[in-house]
Structure formats: C-alpha cells, structure tokens
Image 1: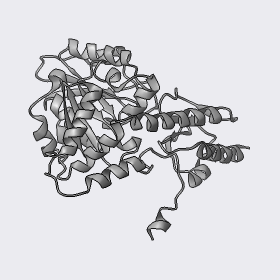
Image 2: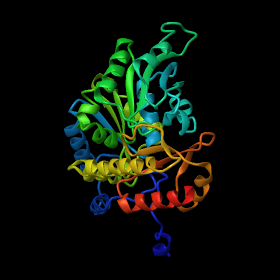
Image 3: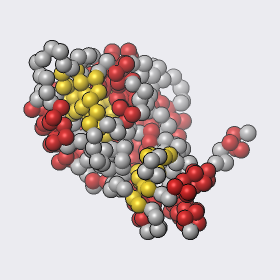
Image 4: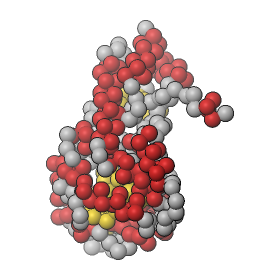
Length: 348
C-alpha cells in the first residue's frame, strides 16, 4: 500500500510538497538509536546549535521549533510587546498564510504595506513610523521581511542593512522570515552570516523544511535581541518538542557541510531554467525577477486549469491569470521540460 501511495510525480505547487533529502533521513535514523534526554537537553541539540553558531556567530540564541509559523510567532513574541506593531509586506507569510497566529498567539498588531515585488524598502516603511509615545497607538516595534520573499525575489545584505539601520534608529528590531533563507543566500552569492548577522538582523526564523528537511525550523535571536524569555515563549507557543533531537539531527545533516547550499542551488537553478523556458512561449509572461525558487507567471487563461490537472501548482492572482510555480531541491530538468511541453501544447 505504501509503495502504491508513493508513486506520485513531482510537481511545482510548493517546496513543501517535496520529499526529504536522503542524508536528512539518515541523520534521523542515527538519532533514533537509544535513549537521550528530552526537550533539547541532548547531544544532538548541542551539536546543531554549535553548527549554527559556526554559520552565524557565537552571540546568538537558538531554539528549535516544529514549523515556520511557530518560528515566526515565537520570534515576534520575543521582539514585540503586546502593545507593539510589526510592519510587513502585505504579501508576507505572517500576514496572509498564518491564520492570524501572530495576532492571536503573539498578540502583536500587523501593519501590512503594499509592495510591487514583495520586498520592503526604507521608503515604504517610513510612513508607518508614527505614533511613538502616543498611548492610543500601537507602538512600531518590528520590521519583518521574508527572505526570499513570497514573490521569489530576494534581499541583498545591503538591502537588509538599510532596513536594520532604520529599525535600530527608531528603537525597533528587524525580523527575517527565513523559510527560504538558504535560497536567498545562494541567490545573492553570500554566506548565511553575511545575509543575517552582518546585515544587522535581530531575529531569524531559520527555515529547513522547504529545503529538504522533514519538519523543523529554528528561532535565532542575535546580539542584544537575545532574551531570557525565549524558552518560555517557545513553550507557551506550543513549539517545544519532547523528542527535539530529531529536529536537531536534521540541522546537523543540513548545515554541518554544504547540503543546504546544494539543495538551494538546485532549486534556484531549476526556477531560472523554468522561467527562461516559459518566457519564450507566446502569451506567457514572467512577472517578477526570479532570484530564488519561485516563478510568478501569467498564462493564457485557457491553459491554467488543464495544466493544473497534470501539474500541481497554485493560482496567485485569478483576475490576472497569474500562477506561481515553485521548484525544489529534487526538481530535475526533465520535470521542467515536461511542464513546458504540456504548456506549449495547451497554448498552441
């Protein structure tokens, strides 16, 4: 029965649809041997934390959590008081795809900002930096960005530094939803340290699931954003795993060497290959820069439904006939060629 269920083709709906990298599965098997203390008091968590410090520097606090929403909620709760506000792009995952969890659990107020490419800039943020010290207004406390953004665009270290400087000038913090932080780093040709620590980021939701892990993210607080409250916030947010060694083991497999980079590079390269092929077809338009592993594209309306029947992907903007394709660590050129061939037949 399991063999029959697993006989499914790869698609382009999400990098959450992909399987787990074999090296990560092997790491989970290794961690499964014997008994170790629960709740992170184990050698796997210790080693994984040391590895992430090797990437980001020693002045960080790392707490492993179950998923991206949990990482975002815990990060924002650690950075923002209940009377504070979080400025984010209107398309940000925390605003669109987390069912109000930041507001409900972290108790923060989200202030969504319209963008053309999913990315905030100081110029877009500045109009919302008002009401400081006025008790009737939520106090601007955090700027939150996704890197890579939901449009497939990526922030450079310099762009992040500009936002961090703006936040710090106003006594605020910069949070990065890094569900695709590996894709962003590879896109910019920089290290994780350069795109996080050196860029002035205060808190990172450190993603792994979208890049070949089974389940597990990390909350990373940096420098003076660290707080003794984080362990309690994680527990209260229902994100403390009893058998957390299995999340830590995945981070060891992914970040001890260059597996994270190889997985992200393949996904990014396949997205670029897909975008180039799609853009060459009549009536097809790639609408955003393809810097990570997401491709936003306008298709002829007649082609969308039949193409979705064969390939799993989501409609991004129904009115504009715009869809989003997402490539993964395990996407191969044959997958892309087959999708493009089917699309070409539908618009012929």
